[in-house]
Image (cartoon, rainbow, N blue to C red; front, side, top):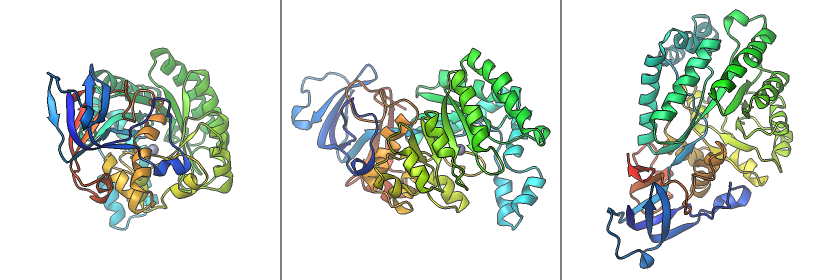
Length: 409
Ligand SMILES: [Zn+2]
């Protein structure tokens, strides 16, 4: 397939660029009036229209007035869940307290109960609908977490659903084991016992079946301490799982430094951020990930992306698509929130949602930029004056077509 007359071809990078940090995030390399050639599902050539092949015999797509960029890389989601929690959300609007909702079986533990009652096939059907929805919105690579099972069978069921999604859909899907998401009711007074179940019983099974790439922990007051987080990370690493950690959503406990020390690929949330956290991230390989949809929906602070970038650090954007705190997987909206609420520039938001998102999943060699040899996972926008119009038109459908491995969705 040959794309011609592309108004702006965005995020053109050499293969050596693994991620973008600090002041470089404000730069978005592009080619005006460009062409792009796709062969065998990969980007095989691109450049200014003056150099476009003239003897091409395959499909030619005229992108007059449209922008072309890499698909979004959503590095943090929980899209495998049973039912939703809209009734809880409505109860909150009606004035019920979180404690009342939790006492009535709400929260993560409610999601866990429903998940354990839901047959695997049903769970797969619900999850695939969500995956198809976000792919149509422009997501071309995604990470999905377990963490609503909180039992051996429930966690394995979630991870097997993720494996089946990976087998049946053409986009890269990474699986994360988040058994340490909450402490289930039957372990309420025995957290150590629950952690032992995760590390000694579940992890060997996950490793044996190759069900996960990453290990995650909800490091937060009332959930898992820094010490617990380290224990799970160490066990995960032993079983071949790279840490990716939920940290600093509500409190700063020192989890960021611990995650960096254990070579975490990413630290996600960071709505609260101390100077020590920023210092710990400097010089590390760990990607800070902001989840603005969660801040929007809960009305909590946004991740201070400007502070991170001013410190020379990279930032990635993800949706956190989940039934409790962010029931939306729309990366286009995450981009708008990043610009309107976190005061990121459109260039910074696009870098954060493409190459840095790919890095946060270990996919930066195959996705996230317009680079010869990378997968042809591309967004073709509607007719737009410039890339700034992507976050500007918040909530509007700006994507015209999604290309995955060189084929239209
Ligand atoms: Zn999350």
